[in-house]
Amino acid sequence: EKGCKIVLASTSSVYNGLPLPWKEDVVLKVTDFYTEARIAVERLAELYHKLFGVKCIILRLFSVYGPREESKGKFSNIISQFIWKFLKKQPPLIFGDGSQSRDFIFVEDVVEAFLRAMELESDFDIFNVGTGQSKTFNEIVEMLKEEMGIEIQPKYTPNPIKNYVYHTLADTTKAEKILGFKAKTELREGVKKTIEYYKGLENLPNV
Image 1 (cartoon, one colour):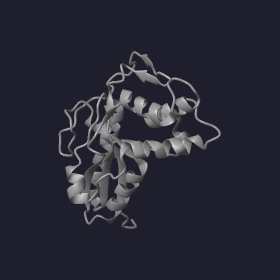
Image 2: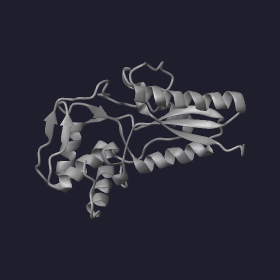
Image 3: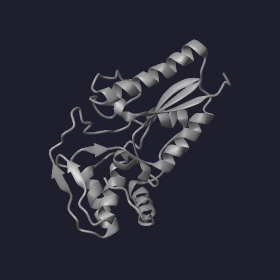
């Protein structure tokens, strides 16, 4: 009614089950209820655009990590959860063997993507917000151990989740070309900032 432009936070989970790297124009598969709900929201956004001229840019966010995730608890990024465990001198829990991988992107870069989407001269489009690089959970654990100076080993347990997303990786070509967005924060730099933030918290979440 006010002619506002919408920037929709969607998720890379919509690509579940597809070969890597993930591009915005692929045909999405039927895999799980969470993915179906996110796809439905995207389609409704496009429908409002087509029927009523609502302007909308959809951002498919990959694994966003960084400070201020404590309110999300067990739904926070795995990097934050691992840091919390290590700060408590506890072993982080990993489903499977730790070879699963994620395209981790720092929250400050994601903010930039949203700002660029707001300013983009386009009535409707979809973009990946990732780095185009991925790391395994085991690699993240080793990086955290190095940065935090600890030798606690993770605990591994069989994965209880059906339709688990084992690997994510963004094709960032479209976002770079049209949105003008490319993540700037190197993973280790982002991890250091995240560690420093959580070191300053008195009460860490239980996950």
